[in-house]
Image 1 (cartoon, rainbow, N blue to C red):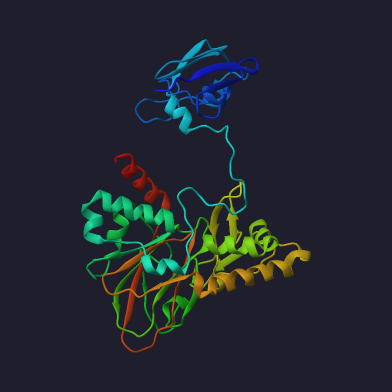
Image 2 (image 1 turned 90 degrees about the vertical axis):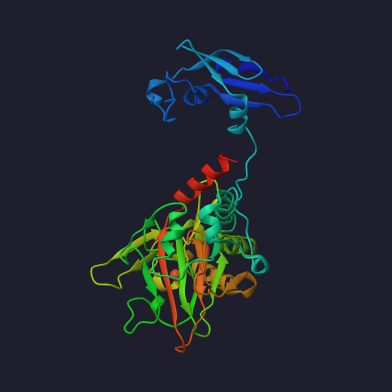
Length: 378
Ligand code: FE2
């Protein structure tokens, strides 16, 4: 193991770790004290923090630091407290490093895609997902990477879609119910329930927070047409950024409005941007749904025509076949989408035969939690 050298700098407010072959890494005394792993600071059982920032003296500083082979020990004043840090943990949590602040940079683990992914659509077999943790881990990782994945080998029975949610989390119930039926209806309450083709969209942008996952499972599909199509919203946003940086900034920089009042007793409204970025520019979410668009009133007068032009351009990108992955679900097949990222669509279908899908919502935090647990176990 290479020897780490620890020095205290800046009047005790900074720790510098010097390791041969690596860039130096600095930590602030306040950060180290705040993240101390000792049992008086963090509960050894559940890992939750037992103190608040108010319990840490404002003038906290380091009086000594020593790098041993398996611990960096730091002594803090005025508390007179000595804490041992795991060097590998410190390395994994280093913040003294260059970082990507490019508007539209991707979240960790995400990878953009286009129609070339048609040759290799991510998916998993239900029996394997239910019985083999490695298969489930790989399928969940595909959802994190691509924002969608198929499921095959299900029994085509009503409610079978809940077996998918049971793999990682819980159903998000809405005013549409615990699940919803997607098939032709007379007097539909939502255009999703007709045979019309639908432009690629994210679901329910009028909710805040939006459902972060959607599952659609097929029970019957003998109608002609009715293929499902998905588009990577992050890829579309980045293409807009590269083609039209000002348009990207407008869609990211102003709230749009979305609404749904299509059923009695329901009045859902949200005020969120079409392209949502984290404060450091990382892509957080896409909201794109023409059916749910409400009058936009938060874009400055002078910018409104350009905002509309940017929306139109993003729609043209979404409609570009080069962005689209298409598949037709057979009974017993399903797919899951990250509804904060991947747009989904349905091609039109005829009245001949039957098309019956069931859909439900769930949330991504549970999926990523299950994935993290499975990855930690390997
Ligand atoms: Fe939808």
